[in-house]
Image (cartoon, rainbow, N blue to C red; front, side, top):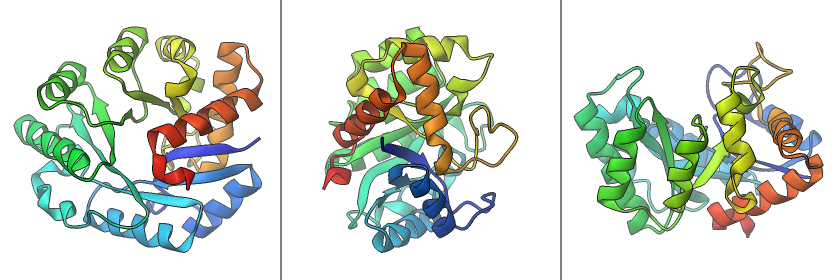
Length: 253
């Protein structure tokens, strides 16, 4: 039984383990693929460098909506790069609004264009911004492959994403007792569109809540979804790993 963590920030300074130690611990927990996420130029470069050293690690290049004012040009020059399988994370965050909404929308649209230009998967962050997220996607047109990272919605939002051809990536939120809507979305998501992630070091799943998250915990997310769907964890490990290859073809090589 092997798991794939499709979204982790193991170079983040909130991690309690080094990147190499995080990977080692996760491998012992049967995790055999990792996508390390870029949120600005520094983290994107770090993800690329880490992926170049580990055959089971891949990178993304992107600018988080918090930093949209920095401009897409600060990361676009890193594309294309070996071991990079996606553009993002990018998108809209209206909860904190560290960047103006108009700037976030513009930079999000520019990331969509980059994903299309380089035939890379698009990794989306959206918080308190569903309507505008769908508006930008519908205006710009989705790339061939799009992932809603750390999917926080319920069945309604899930169907809108799925109708547009997107993948849904579930995090530790699906293990929380007060996440009935998110759990309902995990039940209805087709297996070939369902991904799992840790978003390390954030959102540690039950029973690890209160601790910094790490890729070794991704199996808790998958097992919780297996319980919700009435399946054995090995089935979810297999299906989510297969879906990860569909979402990020580069990790299958």
